[in-house]
Image 1 (cartoon, rainbow, N blue to C red):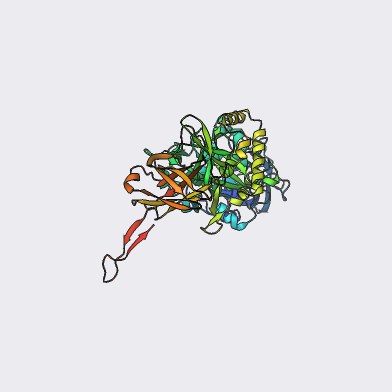
Image 2 (image 1 turned 90 degrees about the vertical axis):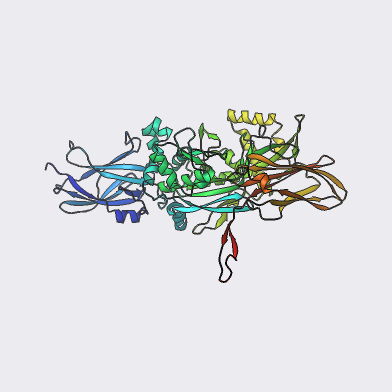
Length: 626
């Protein structure tokens, strides 16, 4: 019987997309999830003979091959046969056949071509039936990205909007973000991000064959969301100058960024900072079917020399010496967590994995970070892939301040080893409230268990056989940081101090604070207080000094005193950045040599005054709205 062919394909989009939780994708192709069957009906121009059936071919990527698991050839059968691709004949009439096609739960994700030919006609070429897109499947227990909770799947896979937390530890603010993973063209753009990666450009066949693995996919996306090393999506800018682009603070979602990158022929979009990178990455991973959330860490360490401490060098006024200080502590830092099994590490490390697209340090020669198991971070297992030492330091480094004197000597100043990694936050499932997840990353600060984990992490770090890392550690030791003294707290001074805000800090107004000093001893103490203030970026990088003054203070036995600190609007207005942040520092030098550094981060509130007219009293009833 010559000339038999498929004349029409009914992809049964409504039925399949409902079963696969893909109704929201507006693509021309059917979108389905791996490890789960989908059904379609074929119309033929004439009926098949008794012994004939259809042989299907599914293939993805260039140079698709069965050896690389990017191609499968399957004959329709009455039953599902093995754990590979299967095609089951559900029903057949004279000129129609209904088939259920199922992919294995570890199939390569991406855009597939489906073709068919009649089994008895060897010389007949395959007829292309159309394309479909295959995604990860958090609903499938055999898929590495399986997530058991339906509530969490709704939140972390299907929700197209969310909350990003920013600000400072004691003043956390929520910002809405539109992920928009189901908007026009976004799925296509997310797939093209994978195709633009250097790995794909170098060896497309091998790259596509590795797209079954969420570890490989998330690592590739982490690298491609920033523009370092490649023509990635977003270009970072932390200098407070955004000419030729958009300020990171102006973005409210990922869709405009992704469209701009795609339509601009893959030219990086200007500009992003950590929350923008995290927002875009969340869009891409949710779109591909990996449960992903956004996490904000307050007082986040950037440990450049990998010794698990933030080593800050200051002068006698508490001002950071930028030339000497390689490490930093950001007011906040935002990254992602994705949920999947760690088949490379073992089931103990399954679950949330840290991923960070902000280009801070290279990982295997590329600016990317993760996936690092959150469990491994909490337990100090820094020898495990990927980038454990860097993430551990972000949440649990010791914050060490060194006073650098004019003669080049340095002395450790008392500072808070509990300062790093505070109020780690993410959006609640099903509501906009903030959930504190600090306990997932570390044991309670100051607890015996937390110190044990820190010591374990140090031992793991120093036993790593990476020559480059050892060189960095030797460099750190050369600056006076020995392995043993990192664990020793500096001697606690006999005074305490803290800044107290006397009036809410409002943009356009003068700032009024007090430095409260208390003598902890029963003897009189004399203290030299050197005060400085600077406008800063959210990375705490100073922009301009706005305060520089000294006070000699005499504290009687157990006496408390308040030193007033005032900064006028005219002092800070010219140098304030869009971040609206100011850092105050007080270096307190006690007569007998003790030193205490007190710091305060201030975020200025931006108030709009609205006049609300009331009956009989025009102009009365002023109300301030933040």
